[in-house]
Amino acid sequence: MTLFDLPSGGPSPARAAGRPARGAPPAPGRTRVALGLAYDGSAYHGFAPQPGIRTVGGDLADALGRIAGREVEIVGAGRTDAGVHATAQVVHADFETSLLATRHFTTGAAFEELTRLRRSLDAQLGDAASCWRAVVVPGAFHARFAATARFYRYEIDVGGPFDPRRRHFAWRHEGPLDLAVMRLATDPLIGEHDFAAFCRRPPDRPDGPLVRRVLFARWATAPGRLAFEIAANAFCHQMVRAIVGTLVAAGAGRRRASDVVALLHSGSRCGAPPLAPAAGLCLVGVGYPEDLGGWWGDSPAPAG
Image 1: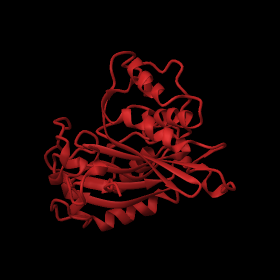
Image 2: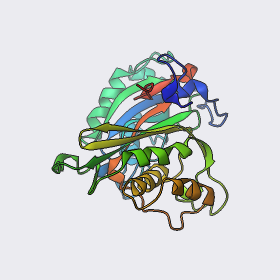
Image 3: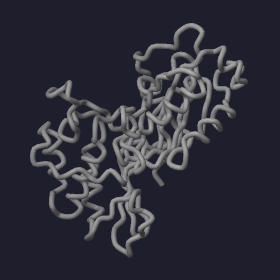
Image 4: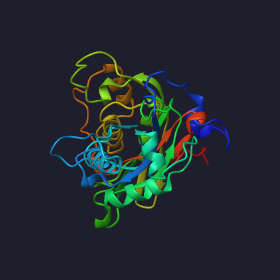
């Protein structure tokens, strides 16, 4: 059973998975605030702050620093790459409780919506990003380690006239794709596997397994468009783009559906199809336990 087999109102990925124990609470005298962000990834060199390079995290940290009057450390639910978008990136930051009260941002109640803080951030982030939510969260909330699921959508345009408005938001694929083959190749990815063959290895972990649990994976269709939707407890670097690149190769006849299983078991990217372009990928939802706020952004719908 996948999440799409669950009846409406059934358990969400945030409730179904356990809560990780990692993630330090805020220091005494500080309040944790969670932010919901959306951004056009084509304007940034990824999420993680980097000196001298424009990133989502860098712009956000600068804006929060101006509000707080000091450097503010941020933690995101996922580190999206250059060109990758988000409609529901979740970030947390710790503020001095006295500052928030003095600026009339909050009374300190858990899950209080900080409208004035959100509007201030939204104004500073410019046209390429927006803050759509700012809320006080319990100290146990951690944007990265408390997250129980991340939900990504990858869009592909196939056939029909080229729409230049989507050049930064979809992969324009020339030639037909066999959706039945792509769906067949998708099924083996669901569940817990070592996804080393679908990941770029981190420099500090040149070998060893990269185990992730895929909660669901499916293809949705619209005239001239395909969308690959996938949720997992976590993703390793470039995992979704590697998966989409392989599934599209199968749909185009350059690979067989069974090759996905062989690649998965190989634990190596040697001979694997190229990554799908960054432009089609978007982080659309992040799940947390219900007592830490539940689901942010788009949530998976049951299968129709």
